[in-house]
Length: 299
Image (cartoon, rainbow, N blue to C red; front, top):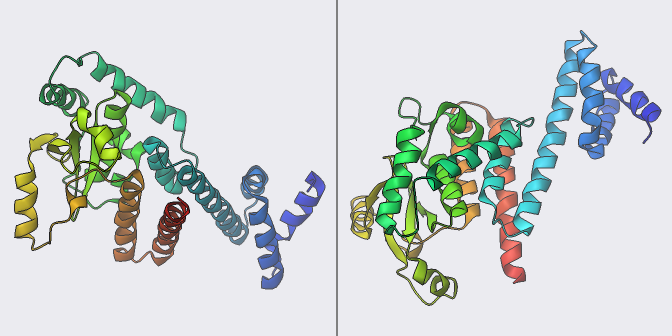
């Protein structure tokens, strides 16, 4: 579609005929992100609030479609890049997110920890150093005053405020640790998301499905990375009357963490009477789960 045709199409956005508007909206959404600058230009040049609302709706649907496609690509590539996944979650709410700034911060945090850590240290010693830099120097912590806030699920807000929930704190911890070749992974406990530090000598055996006990110790991302053992998980499950499962003790795949973020957001917006946002997030989550299932069935 050339510039003249696009301009003519956009000029129909304020048509009073709902059917005409519906057709125009559908066409513009199908054209994708490249039409957003033209739509924003029209929005800025009008005082018609109804037209502005229509443009905002169209831009949002375009961006939502783009996020869906990017998540599909992420999954098709094996969902290995956790930082990419959590950035995509943040882009749902902050579509103009400056991703370079996120990467730059992660790089600085990685360097700060790298300066203090060395591979001659034991796993516990490395964990202690990591926690000192992550929680002590950089002052990351749980947002105890507003733990349910949606902002706690977005990596950009975590970096900005240094406050988050268990999932985002664990995600950032994992991203940096793994970039330093430290064997830190997430564990998807019911009601909690924790971290585990694996025995490097057992990782290959774990990938081959030949071991069930590769974990050296566990860490609580909400409590400054405090170390604990399998016994504490046993006690928690018993107290909560939850039957133990292997996946409550072993590393969870990256997409599990992303789904957990979406569940947090869906729960929040449902409670706050925002069904439209809850529905959008549910659709994103279900798309991820179905895509993962399709990939697993294809193997």
